[in-house]
Length: 189
Image 1 (tube, rainbow, N blue to C red):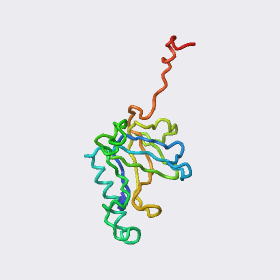
Image 2: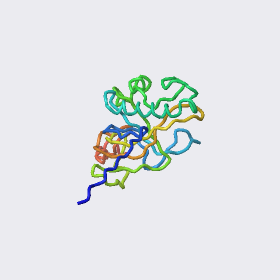
Image 3: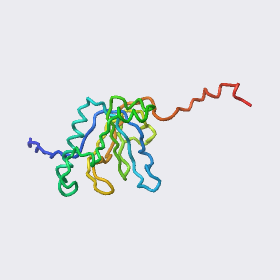
Image 4: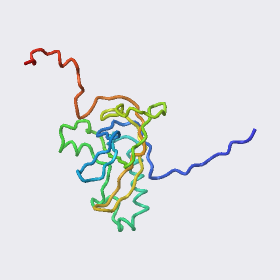
């Protein structure tokens, strides 16, 4: 019997495989744009518990992107400089300005985006065809890749490579249609 040849795959320090987190602002069916004239992208925001091991993975990817571009893109600015955009944001600070966003409490949040539509899988690693199954409020894993940028501003972002839906959750930012709402005859003219 021939010995299996071991393949050693070098780990990409910019790539992060996230554990399960709640997702918000899910735009994976159709691309969206923050600005009317901006590039449309597929994106989602991950709500990450502050004590999650993923926080260190994300910070490690940012540091790796910084180290590779410290002089060429950032002219020696420290990675912690407020002049550099950090995509890992504090949900408690966000909550101060957006008190209705209670799901951000105790979390960091991170938006990942891509110009190409991300692959979306179920827990059996089968591609999900009906992308309405993945919505703001459900729970997903994700594969994201850090990149540096230096255009109108400087800093770091994350590409959204793929998602794996792990579980359903209470929908965020909207209401579910309920046919029983039409049982109220008092509302008829």
